Image 1 (cartoon, rainbow, N blue to C red):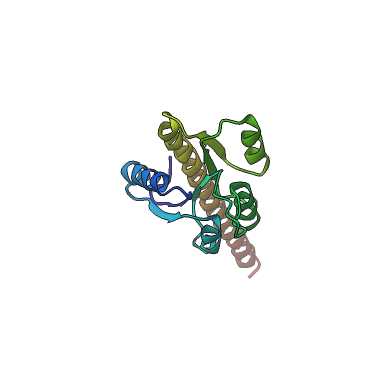
Image 2: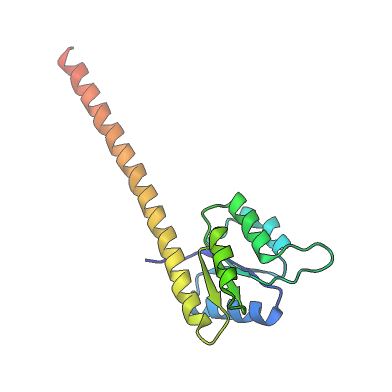
Length: 164
């Protein structure tokens, strides 16, 4: 079951694509919070918000000012938030791109074509479902730890009462 409320970062230098992705996510996931960035650098400065899913354009404009590429951004995200799912989006169907992004830790790759939004919905559901499951497991582990601690306490109290 996917998370109901989650934070999505959209990193794309194309204003039309950013708008289209944001609109799509708002429509499909009305409880999602969406932050959009036109550069990877701006997104990196906001990672403290701990997004649940990141959509990242492969071909971020590599300007002469030294702006980072999509792969550079992925590497930095994974250094800082290694478990956040990063879904790459690209118009290029070069198999080497797919191989590179998976090698550096991307959750998946979506080709910008007529099926991109359908695939994006599936990937977001998979990513948020995975996060939801991890949260449920963490909650269950905490609950189990508390139960074991209570059981140990009861046994200790029982032993103490037996000898007094």
